[in-house]
Length: 348
Ligand code: NAI
Ligand code: MG
Image (cartoon, rainbow, N blue to C red; front, top):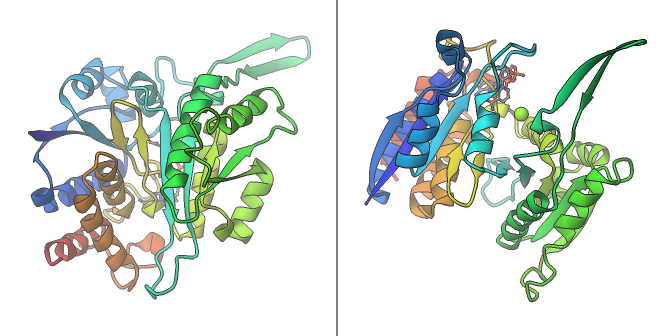
């Protein structure tokens, strides 16, 4: 048996941090079947060179040869470019990776005290405004832009089920549904109802999970004021995207927040951050988000001891706070932080 992992660093700091995730997996190889990596292309640089942002070969290799994958980050332009479409959004669709799971947890220097922030954002990953059905029309009163927001019962129920499962497995067993049903009563109403319907007809399986709701705007407000009230948050695509970036600020940096894009048949780890053009190429990007994404992916696949080893080494690096990259106030490089974490793994 072997474990074949597709590596798609893509653009910017993705190319600097995905190699660190690869190193972390190799460092825990004793806990895993034989590991093989396959390097794959995607992204803006690939598009400018070949005219295609997500080569067919990348999708086919992921489908046919890989058990899982790690994706770095893409540099998507903020303007419309003919023929270009974000490869990460496309990959989530192509592989039906419908759940974006983003744990945000602070590391406390005193292990006896619980972390101040310990939550998971569960983001629906295939629909909402990200179906990208946008139109620009010229009217008598100037330009008019419209976007379609798609919410289905099927997608909302299946993300709801993932959220209930995650909540059930955690000590507090609290699930908060994030929506804006007071304004968008049809679309967000369907999301809310579909998630609420998950426990029906499963014989009390989720009876121990407490269900709460929060309008998205006040959820962000409360997230900043009292983050400890949240445990598992489930949200439609756009709200989930925004909330998880916001939550990252609570623990110091986007550079430490991992995620997985999970479907029933495939899982892809991905740091939550983007390609960070402001620091790309300088060797100072924080590798922690990518290293933790590798751990989260391995954990999802059932390789718990491998994931535990990586997470422990990361926490033992962050807690004393003496080997850190600049985003966390440190002076160390990507390579120095990576080496430090690898050494801690080796000496466990
Ligand atoms: P960003 O996440 O790339 O950067 C935001 C800020 O956080 C920057 O100041 C950056 O230097 C810092 N930062 C992010 N990751 C860091 C790390 N690992 N270590 C240290 N500092 C880090 O978001 P931004 O600037 O809005 O977007 C840049 C590009 O990334 C855009 O083209 C955008 O489309 C793309 N992007 C791609 C994503 C993906 O591939 N899934 C997600 C978000 C943005
Ligand atoms: Mg984002």
